[in-house]
Image (cartoon, one colour):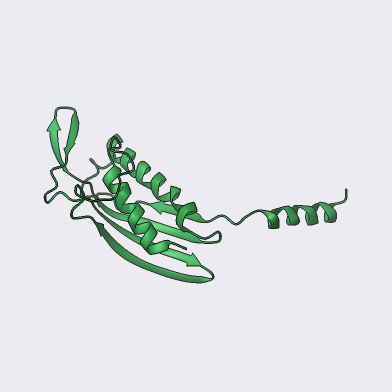
Length: 156
């Protein structure tokens, strides 16, 4: 088979594939309110888990050709820290320890660019009727917060 025919076949196969949305997540700040000490394994774990969760929402709420960039500006996890030797323990009392995430975003959809900055906060996070993704997940309040924001801001 000669090169032009192979090129046409490859183009036809690519055209038949469904378009896939892309989500890029970054954490540009060197320090955050409450995700562990900068450069610690805990902070990296929290950043990686939140990034994976945000990226997992693409197929639920974005259109096939959408491109979304999310910068996580600040994170204040639900609950407060209690120091216990080597490991911090997070205790959620439902008071002034609400989960808060500040994000900046840019969305390219249908040839148009929109952008903004949002502060995500759920004041009654422990009394919410929304189901947590998993009560055993240490970031279930934050993930639920991101789910609600993503749905409200980017649903097709």
